[in-house]
Every structure is written in C-alpha cells, then in structure tokens.
Amino acid sequence: MPVLRALDIAFKSAVNPATFELYGKDLFSVAKTQLLANKAIQTCFDDCSAEVCSLTTSYPDLYAVYTELVKKIVHTRLNDFLKGQEQLQHSESKKGLNPEVTVMLRDKLKGVVAYN
Image 1 (tube, helix red, strand yellow):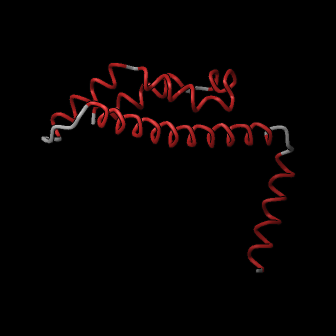
Image 2: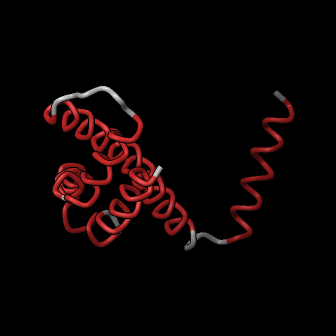
C-alpha cells in the first residue's frame, strides 16, 4: 500500500537519533505533527481510499481515519525505535567489561538454569 510506504519513509526521516536527542519525550508529538502536515501523504491516502471505498464519505470522516492511522503508525514505529535505542545503549555499556568476566558469568548462569 503506497500510503503505508510513504508514511514509513517520512517517519524514518523525522525520527532518528539526532531528533531523539533534540526532542526527547516530545518526539511522539513532533513526529505525529510532521506526518500529519505532509500533504503528499494525505493526498495519497485520499486517492487510495477513493479507489478502495465506493461509499461517499465526507472529508472530515476520512481525515479522522487518516489521523488515527498516522497516530497508530507513529506510536508503533516509535516504540520500535526506542527499544532499539535502549538495546544500543545497553550493548555500548557492556563494551567496557572484560570478555573473560562476561563469559564466566554466562557459564555460571547456564549452570544455574541447567540445575533448575
């Protein structure tokens, strides 16, 4: 679906590590506002909905559906992005550890799991 592809591309350009550092917790509202302001995506959504739906619905109804779609996509993709950032920070924090210590700890944990 071209609308979802366009939303995904616009989301990737709006949400990145630099914007995460800049906006922090406000990144959700900033990304949602940027995607809702993108008229090309909204026009694509209107065209796709006209092709798929033969019912005549008013523009405010379609805009409400579009707004909800953008909100859900931003929420889902932002959660994925935040989890990735968290994993990246976690892996960077473990880089300073001695490899022998981490191997021994892993072996100890495997032994505990094997006995239980």
